[in-house]
Image 1 (cartoon, one colour):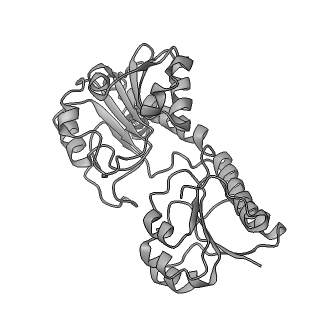
Image 2 (cartoon, rainbow, N blue to C red):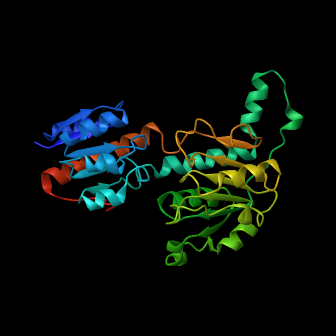
Image 3 (tube, rainbow, N blue to C red):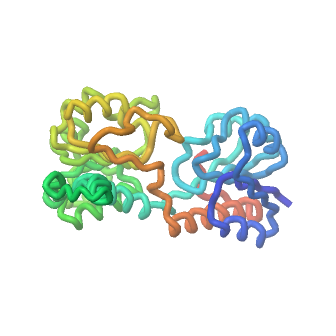
Length: 312
């Protein structure tokens, strides 16, 4: 009987599906790094979300491990080269949190445009700061979407419905742009110059460098805002901080950070910056979907020798 460890908090449906299919499962979400290294040799499979960092050291100590499953899309917390070297399959659950992430991105956009956090805080203090809280409408604005995967497509759909002009920067979009006649394909320079809003829905460059740093920020409108619910460091946090302080751009809303958990960050405390703790995909609905997806993928692998959504 295969044995699986679930090391991050997720919906109980994952454990239930595994047990119903005679797969032994332990749910232990408070392992320290050293404890996980010590215990991992006992397991044939490992299911994580984003909290567990599946490092090279952990993989090297995984004597029986055949499969790592990510209940979500991003696999930045898994050392893929180390897994590949040991012939360990890594799977994710693309699409399971698409709508949740797109909705959170829209919520950030509206909150930033209408100064909702500041309005809430000042009203709670009894200040009635109505005259200081004039916001902006998003209808008629140009939004530049970087990346056109599942989330990028869903968010573009929302933006189009709300009356924004949608421009797309994505290699994958080039091959299918005729299917989306309402969206315009652009280069980075065009996007920087035209967009009132820039939203990230892409993977990081292979070298890990930011897509937007000081040089790119200087090409943007002073009235523009940046939203990132995709990956940390797609925008240089240092350069973004300086741009906000110097009013080179108007604001930013960030859900992902270069170093997580972000207990201390250069963006903390800045005006016109909304920060959330990597919760774009965290809805009750999406967590049920990804937990169910990853558990069924493990069942398919261990019982039917079938591989679904392999990253490597």
